Image (tube, rainbow, N blue to C red; front, side, top):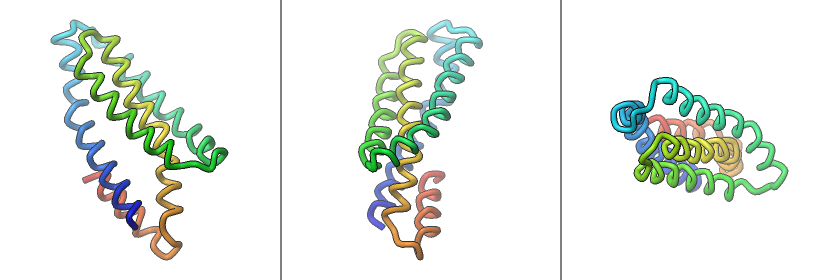
Length: 139
């Protein structure tokens, strides 16, 4: 149950930081950096597409390697680094790199994290564990 709580807290704090930053990105891009709405859409499209594609492959890599923790920790680290990169971005390509790093992290951590959660508890508490994690993630 320890892994469930630690992963839940990691998800909670990562999502809090995302929800604090992402609503401001389009405004920052258009008003401060002079980006057009097309650039904003391009940045978000590339970032979200990358995350979706990597979710498929990271589960496969996790199963092949048999190592879930490095991918999970690396994913959370990339997300944090991506948000730090946004602080220093002074052009829209800088924002794009920050968003790519963040969504890369999300993409590589999701499937291994879920497998790690499943492996951390016994079968009788599996649903409760995923429910607790999801509750902390969406809090």
